[in-house]
Image (tube, rainbow, N blue to C red; front, side, top):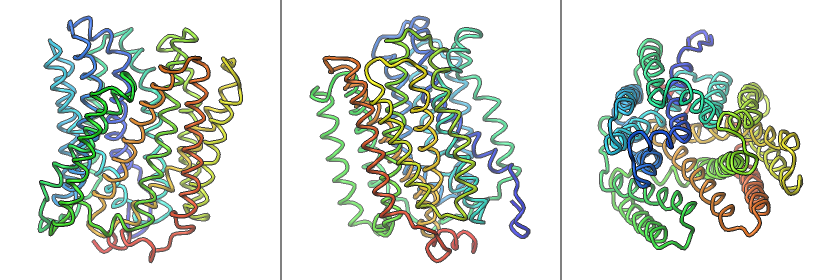
Amino acid sequence: MDKGRGRWSGAPLLAVCAGYFMVILDVTVINVAVPVVGRELSASLTGIQWITDGYTLVFAGLLLTGGALGDRLGNRRVFCTGVTVFTVASIACALARNAPFLVAARLVEGAGAALIVPGSLALLQQAYPAPAARSRAFGLWGSMAGIAASAGPLLGGLLVSTVGWRWVFLINLPVGIACLVLTLRYVTPSPRQSDRAMDWPAQCAVVAAVALLTSALNEAGRRGWTDPGVLGAAGLAVLAAVAFVVRERLARSPALPPSLLRSRAMSGGAVIGLLFNFGFYGMVFTASLDFQHQRGFSALGTGAALLPAVAMTMFASVLSGRLARRTGDRPLVVTGMLLAALGLAGWVAAGAAPAYPLLVAPMMAAGFGTSFALTGTTSTVMGAAPAGYSGTASALFNTTRQIGSATGVALGGTLLATAVDYDAGLRTSMAVGALAYLTAAVLAWRCVPPKPTPAQRPGLSGHVRQ
């Protein structure tokens, strides 16, 4: 982006979105390949679970650490380090000859992802300081998550059925190299806050809290909410969270400054992100189970069946980015959440075992509404970040979104597994998702600024000065 003339350049956006796409794609693309991987590597059930969950646990747990490192060492440097770690770990995954090696490589992948994601938003805010350009960039960035998550099963099924499961990981190699080249060429170095100390006790506490909570939520979908292991992990997560709060009160340089959490826009935006990820990924997960196990769709067919939700994300993100400058963020977030709630309510109203064509409009509404709201929510959170804390703000936002995704999947799985009537469990899951969207709409009305100005966006003015 030419800051002096305000001309749009898509190169920084392409670089950042390539890294973010890899990260989110790896959450879902492996699901189709896991049965084949398990057979070929003679993996146990526990090993198969760790191939899928280990990545998510490390990714979610280290996000705040990645954000803090980005603010301290420079977001471009940490972002590029994350891309390098992720790409090398992907190669290691592809070369794995046994399950323990693959699990270890997946854990390293998760660590690389945690360095990539917080810096991605911070770099976009740095590259596109003008409000209109920034909203457009945030919108396209947000659409990557829905596209990658929903396209993962389709791409995974295609690769496994043609060139083999190892290409599920090897496909990251050209993307990672392109991402690095574009970032180093078109994204300017980021300012550093080298005088800011890292509060390692607080970072360890938040890593433990998020990883334990994510683990409990993942297992709850399989074992049930009353399982001793699930309850134990949840209890330890609470203890770790309490330890984090106590440490933050005593720390001279807290990992999450109190001013961040006291900001209505920051804390409200983070909760809104949790709620709409809960609704969207809960819908994708339960819909995938319904299409494959009840309707007999193949993995490729399931990916194709989810395309209506995916197709709307790109259109919605572009539209919301264009409208944001005229309307402000609040109308976009509220409208998006209400539309998504209407979509899931429409699925509930369709009745037991509705024909697939009746589900197309509800899925489109959920995909459009989530992506339409994501742009404004992202702008709200990043705009509320004080100068020098863009990486931390991005990490907080993405951590709550990851928790929302894990909660939506876990609750959806539990409702389907415990319901006496499968169709009733499916509709209950969609109804809970609709309620989450409605709650997010109410919260957006209270917390999202109606039309942000430079005075309402200290993070913006701070980045311009830098």
